Length: 216
Ligand SMILES: C[S@@+](CC[C@H](N)C(=O)[O-])C[C@H]1O[C@@H](n2cnc3c(N)ncnc32)[C@H](O)[C@@H]1O
Image (tube, rainbow, N blue to C red; front, side, top):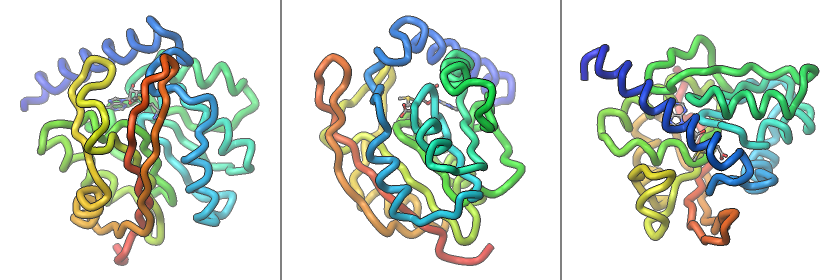
């Protein structure tokens, strides 16, 4: 894909996600959860230092960032393509919260630092094109510190085939292990979760925790 076509596609994607957050409000979207319980549970098991750089990619308007700040993490970034979602989270947290808000398309974003934790709930699975999946994984592999961790949640094989009107790729623990292994991360834990949407629909997710397994 040429640069101009990529830019046009990113613009269309941004409009799509802004409209999703505007039409339903942050607490009405299907992926809404009042508390990012599984994310917090998994992060707690990692025993990270309070100053560990943490990034929530495609964090949207999730309250995961609120919990991280409350837990005392001091170096938290949230990246998203939707300025509407970021603004919702920013307003909710208020001006005193020290968070780096990154408005970017993660496929073209060039990380300028390493992160001790890369968190992604329900973003990687929107990449259905092999080249985009590889671009994402390469970015993750180079942005995660050594030592460092990634926590990923995607729809499970029996999860929905579409979300927010878009097709998704679905993964089991074995496939996420293979994909993350290809960029130097070793899966150390995997689990299943059944997310219940605000309208009561059950959506099975696959969660993995992976760590970097070789020095840079
Ligand atoms: C299903 S939502 C999940 C949001 C959040 N992780 C959560 O658990 O509530 C997917 C999010 O990914 C964002 N997103 C989709 N494609 C993206 C991209 N290429 N770069 C950055 N963010 C993206 C959307 O704007 C949206 O906020």
